Image 1 (tube, one colour):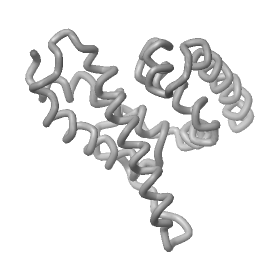
Image 2 (cartoon, rainbow, N blue to C red):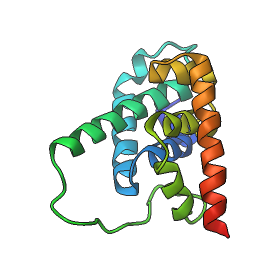
Image 3 (cartoon, rainbow, N blue to C red):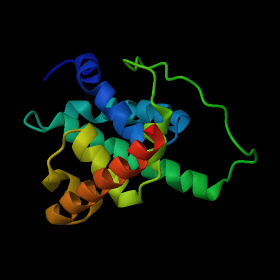
Image 4 (cartoon, one colour):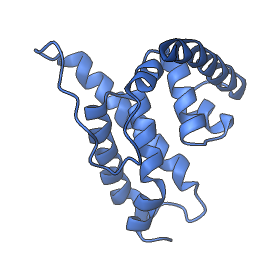
Length: 157
């Protein structure tokens, strides 16, 4: 097995992209940290043949659900939180309009797009994560990308 630091270097950016697709930038950074803290504890017991990326995205998916549930229980008392830059080494400035378009997708489309196109998971794995069939995952991702083409290109003109 690779050292855990190498796992973070190999998959950290992908996991951050998935978190950013599902959550606000501040929540995404927190979910990313929580994902790797949980992964670090479980890593010694991971099957050596396991798909590490899929395993990490599964943990990130659960951390995102935890965030949604926490927000549902404790609404924020302010109108908006200040946006802050990620300190996790994003290679370029975030495209706020694109991330807003991704976050505006329905939940299953957003998750399918994030898991398939950002995490590069096969549709079978996306369907397993979301509790839907492989065909439904493929349909959700296609519908999500079609909606992004429509809304994001609209923002560009």
